[in-house]
Image (cartoon, rainbow, N blue to C red; front, top):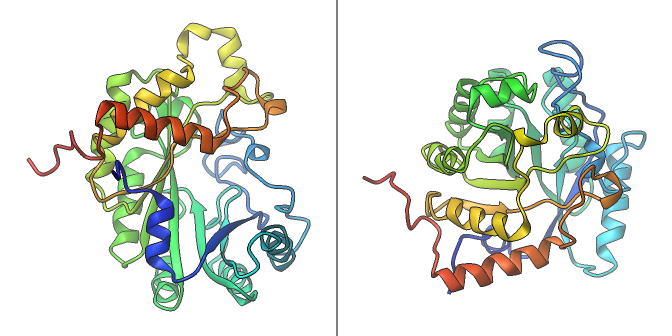
Length: 307
């Protein structure tokens, strides 16, 4: 029984061959780091937690992609690739420079599309004009870091944008026919379980194709880790079992056709300020699927959007 719309199955429906994302660090920064809207970045953020070794902005985009291809092609020689502009804000530059970076990635052999990670406040209409055209000739996803739908939380984590900006960016991007992905963190300080579950309904009301979620992780050297140790009662760090049930409760409230790309993220243990669960991502997903079977849970079962 298919309990939810998983990313792997959806990706197979988009391509007739195996496809793998390769992360790129294209040397961008963020407007809440360089002073345009703030300094210091998001209080939870350390980009080391999700960049593979080949993702290094001292190397060209082409070199990063070629090294990524070498890594994956050992097991799957016929693999094709999506260039994933992942680190920091990958639309935060002039449109002409952005075009050059995206086109360089697409010029690498066996790259069949791009995924662009960005913020809701960094999507100008001029760039959307180009992306609309690009979407007609290659596979494209624009992935917005939403993180929370609550303005109080966004201020607390120094996100530097509002929920209304999130809604605006998603609507404008989707209106161009571009697939929209969103990323959200479950367990940010000040958010109750009821608030978290409400976010499923809020996001489902928007034209979102893909959803990534993961648990809050406290990373060494971040402001949020310092806040936790100063006032741990402000936080609720989920056990693995608690988080599995939260994910399922969330998924049952998500729009039935939304594609669920990720439930969890596991940062290197050496970077964690608080020990993790000791589970690999696939092990966690297996536990979610088993628990969904036990609960007879199905994506969208409690979705109220059609009422």
